[in-house]
Image (cartoon, rainbow, N blue to C red; front, side, top):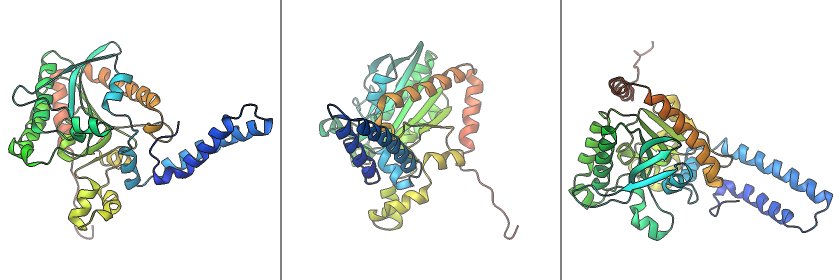
Length: 323
């Protein structure tokens, strides 16, 4: 079924899909109509492939933010067999922008942490648009430490434009708490698998992103800043967000080339927003493979590999002039 939100570059596909629906709803189609339906299906698949294989960075951002794109709660229903949510940080409140709890992935018990944005206004206000406060990161870390105590693999789903930048969050130690999460997650003696399922914005993403295996869905992005924020700083106006997106090199293909991530998880033809179940099946296969592989590695070796992995980030080589 076509998505409710139609992105500009999806419009030709959507128009052809509407024509196809009209043909398919005919009561007694002729052979000519049947042939047209078959040819139109082939043409739609070709158009999807041509469009989505050639998205630029800004178009990728638009897909990552698509209102119909599956979110954490969708994956909890489609990927995991059970989920028992745990609440609160034992200090201030329960931040609903990050969900934590025990989950079951086929026959494996795991611990789950993930951002949730919400779709309608009520849900978005409840989950603060996926932008966590310090208590959200404190909740996530405390629950992950408990999971490590019982040797449960940890799965983190990242989908946030960034940590909440409000005054109250800063007063309660936003930057400090994210730094604590980075430090303490790096020392957890249990496998950690992180997946960027939509937006991976800045420290808000890193606060639950210290994984042994970091994957990104094909049309997601993982960046030090949003394109709009970068454009505001460099060009003094958000209208240059497309230029900023290109300069940031934050698409899944760029990140894999730069060694920032370990895997690109393919999406259904036309993006995850077009087929939640197929996307969930692909994601589940990746999670099971990586959790099983990491679970065979001893804790001390896991810490060593994790340390070396993140120490390699940002390494570059300088050449003498003219060499």
